[in-house]
Amino acid sequence: MVDSPPKAPSRPPSPRAEDGTSLSSAVPPRPSVIVGICAMDVKAKSKAMREILNRLVQRGQGAIDIQIFGNKTILEEEVENWPRCDILISFFSTNFPLRKAVKYAKLRNPVLINDLESQELLWDRRLVLAILDHNSVPTPRRLVATRDDGPHLSEELRNKVLDKIGLDLAKLRDLPRVSDVHLREDGNAIIVDGRIMEKPYVEKPVSGEDHNVYVYYRDGGGRRLFRKVGNKSSEFDPTMSEPRTDGSYIYEEFLATQNAEDMKVYTVGYEFTHAETRKSPVVDGFVRRNTEGKEIRFVTSLTEDERESARKICEAFGQRVCGFDVLRCEGPDGKQRSLVIDVNGWSFVKGNDAYYDKVAEILSELCHRVSRSTNRQLVSLEDESRPSHYSTFIFGCCIFLGFGTALLLHFLQKQIKHFYCKPEGKGMAHISWSDARTGADI
Image 1 (cartoon, rainbow, N blue to C red):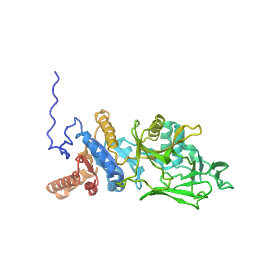
Image 2 (tube, rainbow, N blue to C red):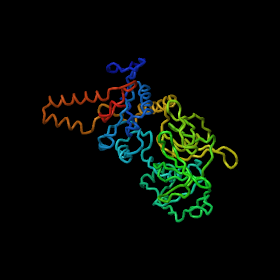
Image 3 (cartoon, one colour):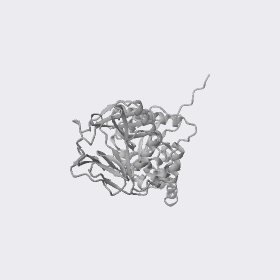
Image 4 (cartoon, rainbow, N blue to C red):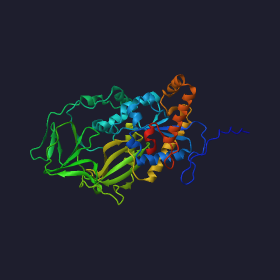
C-alpha cells in the first residue's frame, strides 16, 4: 500500500475569475514555474500579450507565475539586478537593449522561448536570405548592391550559426562592393555590375528594421511602401524611376500574387502554424478594415511545403514564436509556388481567441516540462522579484536604524509591492511587475 503524500501547507483563499473558477486551485509539488517577460512595455502590455498571459496563468492553476520586467528595470538596472525566472520570453523591438538581454540570459540561464543572440540575424536582410537559401526555403530571384562593409556579426554568433546549421556567415563580410548600378537605356531594367533585373522589381534596404520598400514599374512610376499610418500602407509616385544610391539595397523580382494578396504566417513552436491573407499594400495603399476598425484578414490553411518552410525558419533562426511573409504566385511551369519575402521574428496574431488558446496551451506544456525536470532548480518569485542587493539594504538599515525600524521598512515594502501587483482583471493573480510604477497598468 502506498502512503499518501503529506498535505501541503494551507494557503490563503485562491483568487477567482469572474466566472468563479479558481485561478490557483492546485498547490504544485514544486515551486511555481516563473515565466519572465523581458520586452518593452508597449509589447509586454499589448492586448495580444495580455490575452495569452491570462490564459497561461489560468492553465497553470497556481503552478505558473508571470514576472514582467518593465522598461525601468530593462533600461536602467544592471542585469545582475533583473528578476530571475525559469523561462524567458524576450524579443527585440525599438529601443530594446538586445545585447543586454543576451548578457542576462548567459548569467541566469533560463529556458529561452526565442533565442536571443540569433535575433541579431534579423537585423540584416542579407543574412536572412543567406540562411533561407542554405535551408532551401524558396525566395524570389534577387540582386544585391552592397555599398557598406557587409553584415556585422560577432565571432561568437558566426560560430553559433556554423555549429547549428553548417553555414559560414564570415564570407558575407567579404562581399564585393557594388561598382556600377544603373538603368538600362529604355529605363525598364536595373543593371547591377552587369546583372539585369527587369521592371517591375522591389527595392529593399538591407536593414531589417527599415521598412521603406519601393516598387518600380515599367515605363516609369513606382510605389513607396511603409508601415501602416492610419488607413495607408503605401503611396504611388509617378516620378519614381531611378534606384536609390544612399546605401546598400536588395532588388527582388516583383511577383503577381493570387487575388492580389500576401500571406502572414505565425509559428508557435516547430509544429503549430497560423496563416492569414490580406490585401497586398502594393495594390492601392489603402488598408481594408472592418466595422471595428481592424484590418480585414482571412485565415487560410498552409500547404505541406509551406509548413515545412515554417519549420525550417523556426529551427534555423532559433525563434519558436516567429512571423514571416509569403507570396503565393504562379511559377514558370504554371504550378503554384510560395516564396518567403521577409522574416519578422516575434509576432502575434491579433484578435483571434482560438490562436490565443493554442499559444497558451503550448507555453503551458513547456512550463510543465520545465517543472517536472530534475535538471533545473526552480527559482522563487518571492525571493527573486526584488533586486539582489535588497538583503544588503535591509541589513544596513538594521545597523543604522535599529531592527524595529528596519523590520517596519521591510513590511511596508512588501505591502507596496502587493498593492502594485494587485490583479486588475481576470486571471492576473500571478502576474507581477519588477517596475512597480507600471504594475497596475497591465
